[in-house]
Length: 399
Image (cartoon, rainbow, N blue to C red; front, side):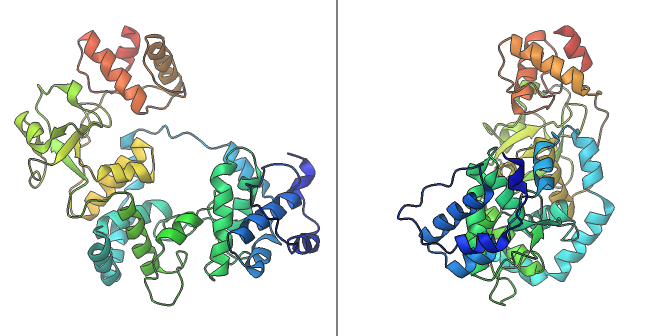
């Protein structure tokens, strides 16, 4: 990418060129190259999609490359905290207290969310708290600049170009101010950090003012989040996660994020609820052990898959689901006494050894993802040790 493309000292020229007649075809705008030419291509696509010139000019005429966005994108850290570390930090007393207060303060919006979309208040509130501390930390990157930068960059233009076009539509409807709307470095907006396409598709005017404002309106945030979560496959009236107690003789190889057993199957093996009662015996359930058989244990139900759709990190999703159970009245989990995990270097060594044995662990990156957990479980089973999917120094030495 030419260094000069990061400097747009001719916004008036851009505004003029964006007013040129649209080309007959609206092919996808190529990434990279001259930034002004790129914006002209985006304008052509927007016109072909029916966006008015006023919204196109308002959105694109002041757009700039934001080098800080590129820096953030290139420096994304991989998620390597273990569950106990992350959940203790993220499910804080502050968030539990303020989450409860918000559920009470916006009770009518939450009631409507559950009525219309089947999503209970603790689930919405959990995402709301983890994403932005209930709107307190929404990001200070100019949204249009962030999206234009990432759409122009050739790393993931297929993801961000449609979001830039959606931002133009939001400007058209008065739901985004190109000069003032700010958010996360990757273009997410508002109190639950959603991208423009999803805001357009699932946005709900919860306060009745004629606009969807996820930055300032809690009712809009609550109803929009509920609509989005519903679209991910939320099953009305069903649980999502529940802490359980385990017998010492459990067939550990049956654990893991698969849903080929039911609550009744697990109960038959001696699994019991730590508080309350287990749900219907016919409900599919997976037994997940974030830090092995000596740490916390949870039954995950089909609604847990919605968390994985929201964020693919197992540690984040388990923490978010656990946070929602706490907001719903569940006690703090029993942390147990799990065996120490591996360092980053040791995890990479383990992945290399697992890959050499024919296991598909994906990229050797030091992350304990689903592929690595499955491979660990298979090797534990082969070696005759409890197959709980938690990698330890002992396992690494055995391999």
